Image (tube, rainbow, N blue to C red; front, side):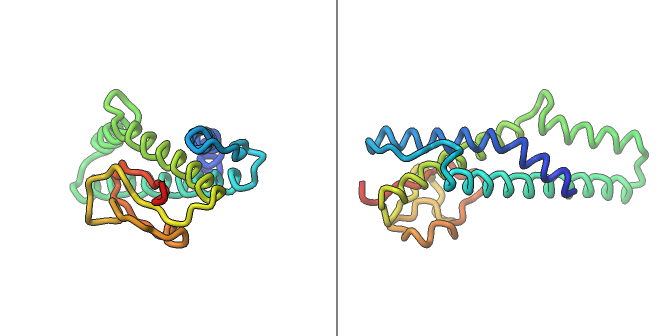
Amino acid sequence: MDILIAKAKQDSTRFFTSGVSIGIKDTNTFFNSDYDSSFKNPQVRLVVDKLSTKYANLTLNTRKNDILNLVTSNQEQGLGVSDLVGSLKSYFDELSGANGWQAWRIARTEAGNAWDSGAFLNYQELGFATFDVVGCEDSITDCNRTDIKLEEVDGLEFHPNHTGCLVPSEI
């Protein structure tokens, strides 16, 4: 499993680097700043490493558990190998086949996370100290919270379909 995690992390690094860089560049434009968005910036490398590690671990553990549940369910129902093959095919079709809606949802979520992380690096560099979550309708999780202190940001919890983003309270 460690080899798979390392490969998934490596494969996702360019994706996250791009998202973080775009987040920084967009906020540079908005705030007329010049924070370094390249991979030469150690903060960018640190954030990309954190994002790709989290993605690799979560994704592979989710897939492993899903497949284990499919196999267990098929065994408990007394189904044969061909039924298991059909179940696995349906599962992977949902991820990346003709009905690959899950892959699109995952990509959208992770791209948003990368952009938010890049923007947040720039917000810190610019000295912002409090933040608001905007653009999401949920009030059960931390969506729509306001005046969040810098040290609280890492502990925020959002629902799986969160569409909001973090912005400085001061603007």
